[in-house]
Structure formats: structure tokens, C-alpha cells
Image: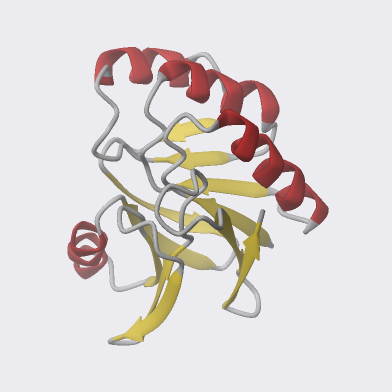
Length: 165
């Protein structure tokens, strides 16, 4: 299974649209968002545009949390995990949070977790720590590194590819 991992959208809807199109072209069937969607209009866009399973968590820039929760419920494919989630993708267990340390703490609660998704730093990166694959997809917004990106995680190969948009 191929999973598109995005983070740090910050309302850059045109770049988000390009990322979703590239994710579909790469064969992704699941989308994971590690936060900083920001406005609910962008969440509506995600809900309307992505029909497959969509896992997401809050970042540190969503101000209207109750409204985000309500909007997420409008789209049956969205699973909103609040600030941190642990879930299965194919044969893998995933911990996801906006902050790396929060995802690492969550992984400590479930010994089956093999991969962590996180954002916040806006820097695309993958590393290994204590048997876990840690993935930061970079930033959709392109604010810091000027190269919007996302990650494609292959659950069978347990491997990551970064795609610039």
C-alpha cells in the first residue's frame, strides 16, 4: 500500500491540490496529514478532494479546534485523531503527531508501531531510531525551504520516497 504523508499546509490550497494530484499519480490510496492545515476551508478542500482514507492530527496552527472536529465529521473518509494517533496501514502500525516527541511517546504505548509520521519543522527527513522509521514529509506550504514536498510511504517495502511539487 502506498500512503501519501503531508504536513504544514498553512492554507496553501493551490500547492495542496498539486500534492494531491502527485500523490494520486504515485499510486497512493491513503493520505496522512501531520497537522497545520490551519483554516477549515482547507480541511473542506481535503474532504472534497481526497476520497480514500484520510488520517489527520492537529498541528499548532489550527485555532478553531471545535470547528475542525465538526468539519471532519462531515466526511466519512476522515479519521481525526486529535493531537496524536496510532492506527494501522496495511501490515504496519503507525504513530502520528505534529511534534516528533509526541509521536515517539505514543509509539512507546504500542510495541507494534514501526513507523512515525510527524511535521512541524517543515524539513523533509527520514531517520531510524530504536527500530522505528521516522518520517517528516516536509512542507506543503513552501514557506521555509521553498520546495514544497510530501512523502510516499510504502507499507510493504517499509520505505519512503520524497516528492517535490
